[in-house]
Length: 305
Image (cartoon, rainbow, N blue to C red):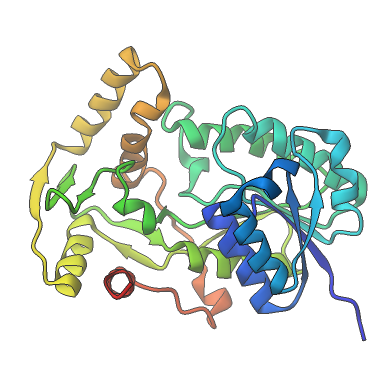
């Protein structure tokens, strides 16, 4: 019986990483190896996730992307590496650079960076704190001998319901938006991004490309209409200003903020609603067996949980 190729996943206990792990295991085309830090095994919530993945066939190797010496064993014999690390500015560039260096030394054939956003290549430095880090790491990545496959999926549906974005406030019964509310934006759920990632990492034909996927291209007002139709609950709409006003509020916040996280949510809204990070080459048809959920389906599933 032929041995399946091995994929190393970093960030396995994160929201997206955990979904990617399940998608890879469910697809069954590759063996899943996950990098875990020693302290992760002692965290009860993380341990529960790791146990669930172990039961499905995942294996684990101890290491830390901030410790280059710990990575050669992790990447040994690996066909592909997927990075699903978070946006920690202390580790995003340095840690992935270490991981890429180890992958290069091991002869890894594909590297999927932790991109998973809109088309950040069209953005300027300063437009978004997190995509600035992606732009900087991409400059490192493109110089490597390891072929890369970048995945962009617009915004995450799940994030739209969080205080970070502050669009939906279900407790207050409000829906706040900038612009006219009819600007087209790209959205995909975590599980669907994970399914596309599992397909991409198993696709040996891909090298040095960026693929775009989006479950739904829609407007904020259409998003609200889907929520109200599914839940039967009407939210009070609050228009906060124009897209230009949104940009001005970000620039004003930069002048006094102690941290970029004070205005980062607004930066994500701006890159979506300004159209500057709009996906232009959505490739869902490449993996047409995946049927990504719409906002209507997404809200319906939430209301039934």
